[in-house]
Length: 428
Image 1: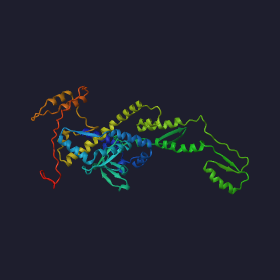
Image 2 (image 1 turned 60 degrees about the vertical axis):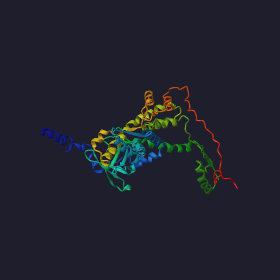
Image 3 (image 1 turned 180 degrees about the horizontal axis):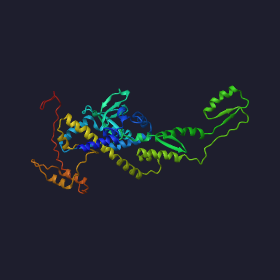
């Protein structure tokens, strides 16, 4: 850099940014010193995830769509492809993808311990307390909770799936974060400004579920008052405990009246419940839950919703597969199998979601195979095999295949000889 360029950079850093290093703007200073914590913690997010039926159903369905029927690999180098296929089977990669997809969608994060690249394992997400980045935004380590020993895991030994990959955040922000996030609003009246906290959508749903039984027990059943003007106090005290259990109460005043407050028939709670439900479905990005809860949600609507869910997962699929290719397969090939980096790069080992598609069989290929004759005079495929494959291509064969004529059996007269007696010997 020229002297003019260096002086200009120094002027920008000191005068405008207020510090010497331009990269220090990547992460705030306080987070460099204390680390960056997921809020709410992964433990809180996990508890809500497993205890809320809508959250679990939505996330697990999306994770199942993401994994699909599995994956297959392709590469320009057959030897490298075989090495990766054997590696995937040895570590059980297909069994690691589903929990990875679930945690990535639900919590926005998933952590693998790749210190031993030949034996990767998933780190319990509730064990991660915070991430530690330097002033350039590069990850240096991850601190575990005290329940897991409070250790610092080096970033080089951790494969971190962070989704979405927002550079402003050390941790990914999954669906559970959005549904558990609170909001602050400020209301100004005259010269007074007050701050209010809007509860999260999941908390609002939980409050509805908590209040519904109370409303039912309060207003859905009749309440009675027992008037006993001449009863003794000890009788009233003994009866009051039992009567209150059923919502009734007792009094000794002879002129007492029972005035029951009832909910007006014009009061409708449906719009409020529907509003919360719509926001939850929108937040979890899973309209298929309406198939179980909403009348009139047809099969055609379900197909459209399923297509939307699949398209939504395309980005997450690409994100996970790129992480496995770059941070798992390539280090394994270079470090463990000692392939040269240039060869690995040219091999272009790739993961593709779904079962491996076999090339379609054409009529021309079948005809050519039927005419190929080996050195022993036998064709590559028999007449029966040819007809069967042609029929699978959609060709209608009217004349059935003739079975080869059976060789007639020749029955020879046979003399049975008892065991232990030779032919020609007579019984005594």
